Length: 557
Image (cartoon, rainbow, N blue to C red; front, side):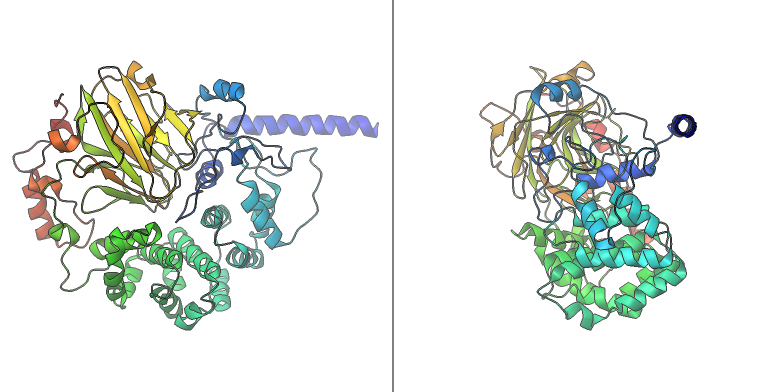
């Protein structure tokens, strides 16, 4: 009788869970989109990504052996499996249904309780091998979320993130963001206790210079909290000691990774106007003026710092007597660039129009100013960060849905190369390619042959077989285009300078056939200009001209 009653109970509970799942499947749960985004964040700030070869490792708790895709919030069903299985999965579309996060299943035994540091490190390890959005979240993550429901538990989780996440793990900042985003919002008392525990100051920033992981993790935590708690809570968190700590983290003695995350944290804090005023009144503009000289540094980590410093000086923390970068950059020989009028909201574009970076949690996209209808065309991209970017070709019909995670390669009007996950994306379906993972400094080539209706992708001159799927939906009006996950950056070359690995076939370049008026080349700061000057510049840019990205579509070869 007891056994029969138990069986009846389990069956009823399973039925209820199925009904709850079906009712919840009408909308996407943010957990799995965030998790998918952060699993692929494997090439952050100078670190190589998690390759498809690595994704064959099995998670002992979940038995997973496939790889997940990244910030575009979709599942890669083809990487890290046998050739036959990969081919079968490569044609499987994105699953639009994501069930809500749940606890242990009805028959899953209770695992032995671990300390918080072990749970954080387990989460760091297991997210490399989680595969499908319909998988249960790992036990370690569920337990951490349960712990964080109390003030003391939340504080313990945050302190562990700062204490144990290693500097050399490319998923470290991703795990910090993932766990803090999924944990309950901290109370005012919890934030005050955290400030008291950290007791930040300029002196603290100078301590443990040989152990930068703690400082990188601290600045990453501060940036995540500043973004999550914009408003009064963010104002309270940016205490005088915290501001001193972040400013000191920009000193020349700090590790470049610490500098980068301190800069991003200050940017996130400044999303609140009162914080922006406080930060602007400090010495930050003087510090940034030194760091912006790294914008073209051969060290790609320092180059990221330089890019962010220059962007902040142009958009957030203005310096008296300093010209905006767009006013002094030489664009005489630039005839094609990234289109600042055809970009999702949070992507940062350099004043040259040839370099882009994403520091948002969304999947940001951009097209260039020139499109083609016929002929053979080629452009190159230099990889500055080795994480998830989807780069390739798209028509005007391709949609940018950054918050939903849709970018280049996620519809029938675009095709993208992903060198981190070693995938080709078309219509939200993926298939593996034979190139190794890209790394900082690699040159990625993109050849479009409209006469043969094919696209060819190159890594440092080594080509892949042609891709032809997109031509079943589009045959003309192609732009160079790209999508970026968090902390990713690259530089485009549309032919204004020699290519590093030009293909052997005859081709044309955008820069040779496109043309832009001087006013069309201006990448305006998003903020910082007075209204009169902004209106004057915009008027000059729009006078007697049509939209840049549509007027050039009639160019042929």
